Amino acid sequence: MGRGKIVIRRIDNSTSRQVTFSKRRNGLLKKAKELGILCDSEVGVIIFSSTGKLYDFATSSMKSVIERYNKAKEGPHQMANSTSEAKYWQREAAMLRQQLQSLQENHRHLMGEELSGLNVRDLQNLEKQLEMSLRGVRMRKDQVCIDDIQELNRKVNLIRQENVELHKKANLINQENTELYKAYGKRDATRADSTSLITNSLSISDDPHAPTRLQLCQPQQENYETLSGATKLGRLQLE
Image (cartoon, rainbow, N blue to C red; front, side, top):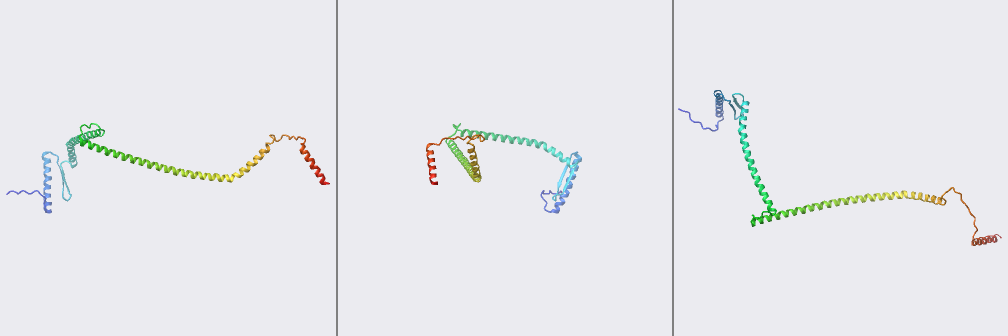
């Protein structure tokens, strides 16, 4: 009587599942060892149980098996990657060329060139697009002008404030000068008067050491008569 086929599915009973795992694990490791000895091949087996326990087998060393596996894997994989990458960039280049042609054509239409191939609807759409663009340009121009005016007003206010501060400083300097003039003006005026008197006295003669010359002159007739009359009157009063 032969053995019946076992359905390959997860064993629900944990005890049966653990027993089956141990038996099949040992059988797998045994078969791997036999394969390496009989066929002179390099075999490596790594097993992790459901609890996270590690079981492994290698004919030489697990590190050398893994390194050999990575080297063998990288060759064809790199070629496949390079081929797929080249195809990807070819598709991207074709899409970019198509977009560039569309943009160039749209730009020529906006400049009023090559309009012969457009129908009435296309021309209407182009006209609307130009009107919207012009509206946007005007709005931006107005905003720039408003910003410039606001900046100029701000600078004018700053200049006015600076002028007010300068006027205040000028007024303070004038007040200080007035006070200084009041304090020292009289002293300077007195000094100037004395200096002018000395100058006038010295101006009588250029040389102060020169001798003074006196000269006698005959009195005038009117002065003489007046003097004689005054003399007679004095005599009568004395008598």
